[in-house]
Length: 536
Ligand SMILES: Nc1ncnc2c1ncn2[C@@H]1O[C@H](COP(=O)(O)OP(=O)(O)OP(=O)(O)O)[C@@H](O)[C@H]1O
Image: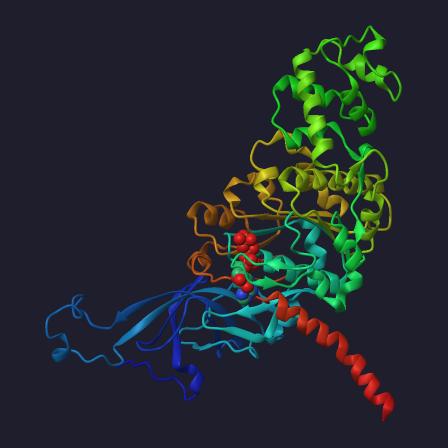
């Protein structure tokens, strides 16, 4: 009779593989064994000298008894003993295998029948360290805990191919973004632009559970990798941040389209004026009375700064449409007066800081959604324009930039013609080294064509089936088999699917405050060592 004892004498061979296919494994373990969804197992195929790895995706009760009702019959324990004929069947998804030369390969073959299965240790998975990127975000997680020796890092090089962070509220998205920023500040491999309308990322604030949190300035070890542009005078004085300033000439007509709903006729007005400089546009719409405006009467509009050309283009438009545009121009300049002035722009400083591979944080506390999108749109246009100018034929590569867009469904939803600039960045940015970091709680509301461009998926707990399905079908690696795990992710846990890491990795994201404490300690210790040595 078969039993669950080791088929050889090694302790680790307590579980054994019994079957299925190249793409799905099944093995059995004693009925009282503690295994969890997400646990990583190692399958040693001694016959072929290969070591396979797989991830547990399901656990079911099973037995060798032919009576299907043996466990529900009355007095069942008088006739059956729960011995080795009763066990757990474990379903697992293959991750790949190490061949004789220790190269990690895609799961194209199957382990020998009864190969020994064991829970993978950090040592077993140490080879993965070589495959991880520089931007550390957490440690590898198994169903029951973490593998301390296996940090998870994204590859800086693939960031231009867009990243998506998908998280239901409260699952640790802000913490993830801060950890990601801290690693970017340390590595300085690309510029990262983040607009923070809540004013929390720079100096800290409150988490969604109201706990006090630290900010990026507390990452003192990486301080030279950070540039903050703020409108808050107190922060400028205390932290020597730069002042955020944009000027009228940074504005384009399409910014109004992004911020306000317009009729077809109003959109036509804006489209026809897209190449007009912001100063001229604002001057014209702020000073013209559209009840009397007539392109043939120069007295009814300001002629200087190209006013005549604008007036000519507006010939034939209904005064009602023009009045709406004028009102929106007034709202734009009025609500953003804290940083939008007739002249004096920090845009070139911002772009320079990004070129120097810094994290550039735009801190606009209490400014609201329209201001956030306006600033993001102006800077994105600045970056895209410069990278386009760089051209694809030039020998040196353009500096690489990643632009973070929070609540991205606002600007990258299906059919949103008005948010052209972000779409352009999503569709062609990668050619110029411009990547988007699309952050959203509702991936199903993001345009499928945009999702198809994303190559790095950071999935942090999505309760909605529709959202998970859309992520499963968009990710380049198969996430559908990890659906149960994604459903059961805790706060601060993520499944990360990215290029250059051979399979989706479950990750416990570092807690930001602990992570920067470590980075600061690590940066300090070589200096302390040096000092100690110096005095000896
Ligand atoms: N990696 C982590 N390890 C431990 N705790 C975490 C981790 N990530 C987040 N948390 C905790 O979970 C709580 C929520 O985190 P956070 O504020 O980052 O969530 P969020 O998804 O950004 O929420 P919201 O969408 O409401 O802004 C915080 O109290 C934080 O301390």
